[in-house]
Length: 393
Ligand SMILES: [Zn+2]
Image (cartoon, rainbow, N blue to C red; front, top):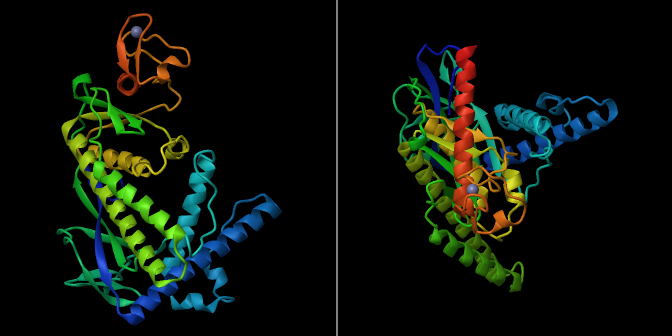
């Protein structure tokens, strides 16, 4: 992610990066974390309930601040106030997104202990005595918890500024901290795409993506294998006596496998997006909202479906920091129904086949590669149209 920001020198851009550290809290710190997770859920639900009531009564959108609840719920005072303020920010943001695009993004929902992730976020503040959150050689200093023992996969570089920390607990009981750093870099020279250096990508259910040159993501067979194991475990669980020792062991196994799949998927997405961002000068994709994509899902348990939105975001920032554009094509443009060779628009039906021949020009098309070609052509046209407008203005 890179964007202009006040206080940043000319020719500089701000970038963000995250270091994910494993945390080893002592007993008291772990208890404090649990309480903070609970308080965050509590305050989110209270604010959301009041927002709804207020909206019904007055037709106005308003979210009260956490301070309002402290008198009737004194336990809120025991946890980091920053974490509660962040819940207010997150809820406000969730509503902004929802109001802007209610069809793609659902209304913010109530949080449940059973299904929602245990996490809280806190921002670091600079005081004369120093920042409120910082890292030591093998620890992370938080406002209320003090120094929590931590293991870092890498260290921040000189000049990186710690902005905020999200502490989370996985279903398998591990604690992690995602530490967000901000730093300034020299703004990259903008790269102008050409047809030869631009890649068109189409979301593909079976192959993750299909490209205009006929290539596709390497079928991640390991992912499918893990997925099959997961389904097997699920079936076994459904036959077991809930609460028994075997059941509890199987549940733990199931959660570990789930985590493993999430890690595999993240690695795959990072590798693929890096490879593409480094190898091409621009990428064209459709601007679909990911909710729509997942609504179309017909293959049960396709583990990559949920990763496509993340893939697009990774591509965006990895391209951006090299001065390259990610061009999003209007999501209502017909891309599967047009012949990429002659531009003939087909009626319904035929274009749904995996391979089809254009009745007008006789070109033979792979359905997905043809769509990716159209996305690329449309994206480039859009890009240069905009450039022209900018230059004539
Ligand atoms: Zn044709």
